[in-house]
Length: 130
Image 1 (cartoon, helix red, strand yellow):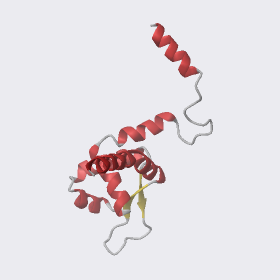
Image 2: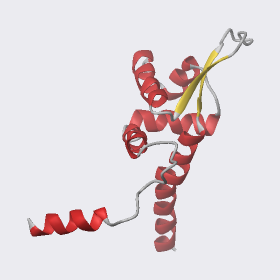
Image 3: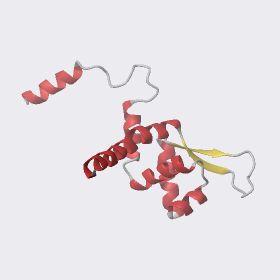
Image 4: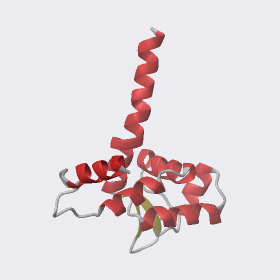
């Protein structure tokens, strides 16, 4: 119990995790991380970042995912602010007017989070294999 009290008092005296004027709360940042803890959502976000904005049909075909599964996970990504669903004023030549794209937060959390860790793993593997 003494350990718990000491840890709690030490954490109370630390600097806040986010600036006072932070646009998002700690819980919102953690929700984004949790969203990317799902492989399908990670693949959707990664694919959109690599390929650019796409319609749900294009995503379904590219990721070979059932439509209802894809929409469920897209909704989750939109809810936490990693992806946005945009509508064109007019349909394009394919008849599509709704598309999904990665937000700047989505790009940041993917590029400076998971992808960076994955890149480091490749670098370490390369260093030990030469």
